[in-house]
Structure formats: structure tokens, C-alpha cells
Image (cartoon, rainbow, N blue to C red; front, top):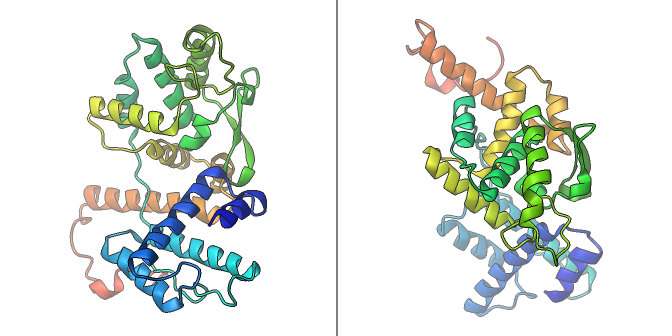
Length: 306
């Protein structure tokens, strides 16, 4: 397992967060193998099927299972390359099919309510306002916000250099509101949060003067949502960023670039959100929208024209 972790870092170039996910999955399997009286290195395909079934029984969602199977293929492929075994028992495992859930999106009114719920009478309140304004303005992932460096902010050009997944970089425009709060935070607030004896190049810092962690960002977000009586996740701000751009007339390719998606098919999920909103509007507002269309239920989900 240690050799595999070293391989992920030095050869495969897997990002730290992904590496932790990979190793967590392998440790899950190792624990299961010990309990079943099996060897991790010698597990057979039937053993892995039993393991996957065990996780399904424990209500692990399809997305996590699919990721887990991908990790197993990688791990046992590594064992084959290193001559620990002759075959990859995970090669024939089928990834469970599932429908892709639509991303949760906050309405414009909920976005406004969220920001209004952030208290601005403390240094940390101004920091939080700046942090979440930037996440929403630039469509950042929580990890991208946590790792953002001072040198990545180009205030004159109003651009943000973001280091995303897979080491990919992208330039994202910063909105007027986010620029306003960034200027206040960087010049008037951040210097007071930093500890004089500590050098810190990350933009958002904690009460101890170090970089703000992902867990801390998540915790602050949940507290603000509770105050605003909103159910959401930090990532919902990124989903809302993309959806609101499309609603405003942005083209899909531009949104793909702004989000840093390697494949446009990942971005296309937001067009389904738009379709759902169209269907809802038709149902609620059209005189016959809530009535039966007369099309048999078995055909109502069939695409194409008639």
C-alpha cells in the first residue's frame, strides 16, 4: 500500500486530495479483507464483487461506488506492473449505472439572502464575505479558494489565476462586487489576521494566521446558511455561478472554460438544469401545463420529435 501511494505521487502525479481518496478506498478494502480472512494482494474478482456488494448494502451511493471501482482497477493494475500478481481482478468489474443528479442551485434571491446574513462587524465577517463573494463570482471549487495565493490575484486586470484539478490553470474575470470586497479585505483586514512571525501567501487566513482550511470554509458556510435559513453546500455557489451565467445568455463553451472543465460533457449538466426550469415554468404558468398531455407514460421520457 505504501508503494502504491508513492506511485500515485511520484509517477501518476495524482493531486493530494485525490491521492487521499484513493488511499482511503484501498484502506476500506484492506479492512474488509482482514475481517473476511482474505489477503488484499491476493483477492479474486469474486472477492471484490462481494466487497462492492457489502458497500451497496451499507447505502454507499453510485458515484462513490464507481469511483471505488476505478481505484481498485488502478491498485491491482499497479500490483500487476510490479509483479506482485499476474492478473487484475478488478478489470472486469462493471461500474453501476446511474442517472446523473441535477446540481443544486441557489436562486438570485437566496444568493442575496446568504450574503446579507454574513455579519460585517468583525474582521472574520469581512473575510467570509470576501471569500464567498469570490467563490460565487469566479465559480471556484472549495479547494481552489482555500489554496488561492496572493500572487494569483491581478487586481488591475481584474483577473484571477486559478490552479484547478489535474494541475490545469485558468484565468477567470473577477466581478465588481468581489473586487470591492477583495480590496477591503486585502488592504484593511488581512494584515490584522496575519501573525507577524509567520509568512503566509494564501489569500484567506484563519484566526491563527495560517491558511484557512477547507473544513473551516465548510463550517463557516453552514453557519451562514443556518442564519439565512438556506439549505445548501459550498459547491452550490459554483453550481449557481454556472447556471446564472447560462440564464444570462452565456454560451456553454465559455462556461466550460470559466469552470475549468476538461470535457464539455461535464458542463452540459447545467443545460439540464435549464430544461428542468423550462418544464417547471410550463407546468406552473401555461393554462394546460398541469394537465395530462395525453401521451402514454411509457413514451413521455422518449427524446426526439414526433
